[in-house]
Length: 102
Image 1 (cartoon, rainbow, N blue to C red):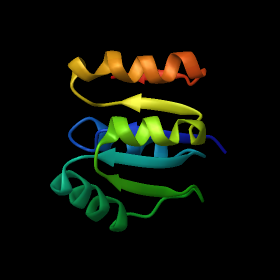
Image 2: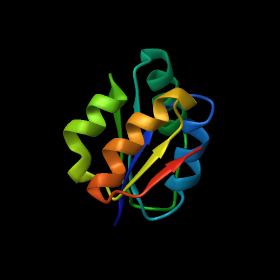
Image 3: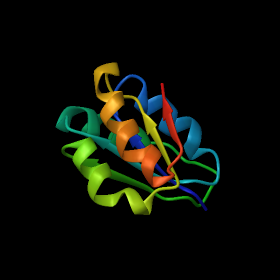
Image 4: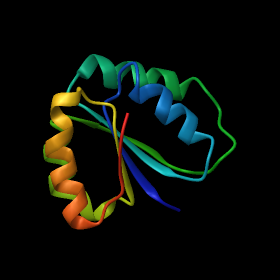
């Protein structure tokens, strides 16, 4: 089962995680905002999903988390502000990690 890192748990990242949670993926939702992670946890803990995939949360520097754990992920999805995408791409592309910027 692929492991997907979703960078950003706000207005874009949360719906992406929700859509992917219906599929066969293990997800990590990362954000530096305690409020965003708290809302995401509340959202997911109040819903049932058909799949057995896992969902974990990371509170802190999303790009630092990616840099320290890039070998753990099959795909990286960015829902971060556009000015952060170049740095994310520079971490993913040379390491052969498919990267999607939304």
